[in-house]
Structure formats: C-alpha cells, structure tokens
Image 1 (cartoon, rainbow, N blue to C red):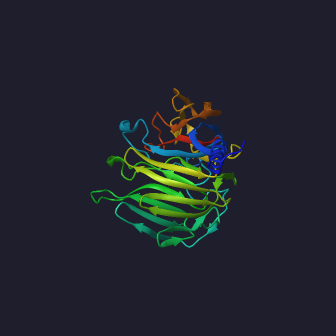
Image 2: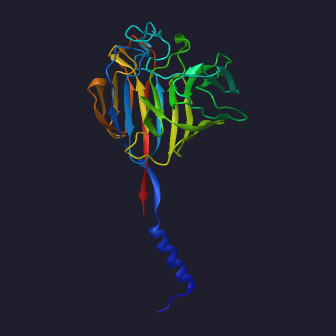
Image 3: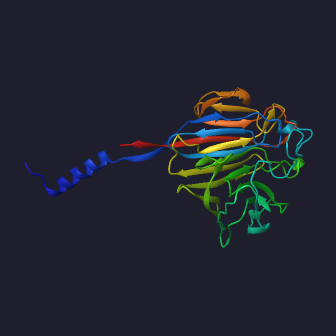
Length: 325
C-alpha cells in the first residue's frame, strides 16, 4: 500500500503534534524554612525565611499595611540600639569598603522619580551597572523609586533596591498622618547564596519607566523581570518572572527581618494557605519550622513598639513550569 505525498505530509504533522513537548504555567506551592536566630538587638536582621520550589517561574511580592494600621496612636520609627553591640554605624562584623558618595537623579518623569545613591562605605565591594534610559552608573548602593502624587504633592519613596547585595525594600504609600512612612522587612529574589548573610549577585540592572519595570541579569547567567504592578496606600506590588525556572536545591527568595519579642519585631507571625484555595493558618514566628505554602504573609497582628507602621510582606501567585506532551 502506498500513500500520496499530501497524506504523508499530514501524517507527519499529526505525529509531530503528538510528540511535541511544551511547558505551561500552573499554580505551585513553595517550601518556607525558618532560619531565625535569637537576638536582643532591634536593629539586626536575625530573621531569615527561606523560600524554595521546583520549577518556579513567576510569583508576586507585596508590601501591605499591617492589619492594625487604623489602631496606631503613636508611630514609633526611631532606631533602638539598646540591645545592640553597635550604635548605628557599620555592623562590627562587616567588612567596610570606601566609595565616593554621590546622588544622581536617573529619571524624573510625571509618575516616578528614580534616584541612584552611592554611600561613603558599604559592606561589599561589588559595582553593578544600572541604566535608566540614557542615564547610568555602576557604583550605586541604593536605587530609590519615588511615586509622584497627581496633585503635585511631595513624591513618596515606595521601593528601594540595593544592587551590590540584591536586597529589596517595599512599603505602601503612607497614610497622611504617618509622614514618609517606614520600611520594615527586606527580601532577596533570584539565585540566593550565603556570604555570612544571604546575598544575590546581580550583574546588571536595566529600568524601564513606561510601564515601570526592572530587568535584572544575574552573575550566574539567569535573569528576572520585575514589573511594578501597583504603588498605592493599600500596597506596593511586584510581579516577578524568573529565567530559568528554579531548582528546589537553591533558594529563590529570602525574607530578612527582625524579631526580638512579639511586641518588638518587624515580623512576629506567619499566615499562609497550603494551596490557593486552602484555609488560612496562622502561627507565631518562633513556632514555625517549615511549611508548604501557596500564599504566605509575614505579618504582625499586635502593634510593635518598633517600626510600628511598617508593612507586612506577602508572597503569592506562585507558578511553576509544567511539561505537557
């Protein structure tokens, strides 16, 4: 029996379709591991909550107002070094590298002001190229994003990225009675490694302003696209895409924070769902060892006497690559 050329071509197309392999995104859960160590110092990041997952390609991270925001009578934002072995300068165990301090306005548009700042000293020597349009620099220790008010009021800082060690800090726009507002926890995103503390080595950063997004190229060859989805009084939200997909053997994010006691902490409890449709569970931070989560919020429900109005941080909307045939 013989087949005509058109039929042969059709059979080949069907066979190729049956054998094709594609990757599609599907909801995922991640492992959250508590590596907190005790401290009496309210100015020291002793909290490390490590996130791992297999094949994770996307997630969202948000800074949200604490649940007790309307009950705050006095916002305590002053540093507290009473239990520390340093007084606000460099940490005594940190190396110190010298730089020429400077501040550069990288972008000043109708919605955003983006500023690069070089500190006189920093604990790592790394220099990371940062570009916003035609403006660039390779020595910035902070890249600050200020949101501009529609009424022409004072621009408010809502996001800071530290290029030399990969740390991010977010906060919602403050309620008017809280002035500039205050940061609390910080976090890392990307291929995390340990250098006495968790770090992410970034090779370069490119920032787009319409819409606002960060393109990060990592030193190990991977990359991340970080889109600023919202900056408001309710939240500051980032939508993150990672390439390549994560391996569970290596953290892809770490939340860094401070916990001395339940009433003296930037995070004192975790609330999470094991799946996106699962029931919410809540436990105090010291009671957590390891959890599996589809959403997790690093939170405080009792007002803290330190950084009282600082935001909660929530990770959610995890997606992982699934192979289909």
